[in-house]
Length: 151
Image (cartoon, rainbow, N blue to C red; front, side, top):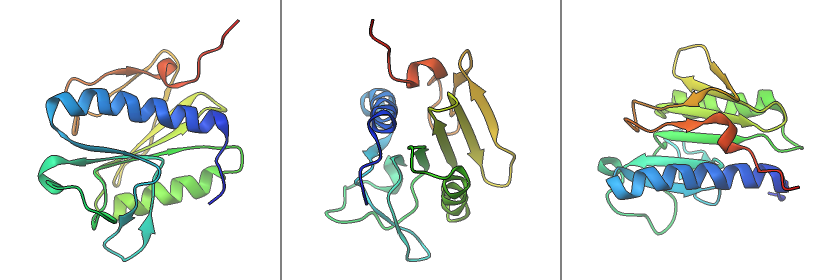
């Protein structure tokens, strides 16, 4: 897979940092970046841009690929990505057991939140991202996910 682009990787890194900073001290589970592969129940091998697995589902880190669908999957649109393809990837994860899927689109500065069988929730700057089913009390302003501008 070719590099994704600087901006999209910075957004993915920020998301991983936001998740890890909440998850690790609370020992909720494992937060991974884009190199962590998941062998899904349908035998496909996928690697979201960021992911989370509850501690009780993955007590020990695997040496190779995790043999499950993550509880949270995050995709970040890069310049070469097609939004419909990213949405289909998230839907595949959801159909295989992922609880929540997030699509971060830095071009439009929006986050699409997906739950299985439900319409996407669209969040913009000024909104707060929460995922109460996995991270009770966690709140991230959407504007904090995008790269800073330096004068």
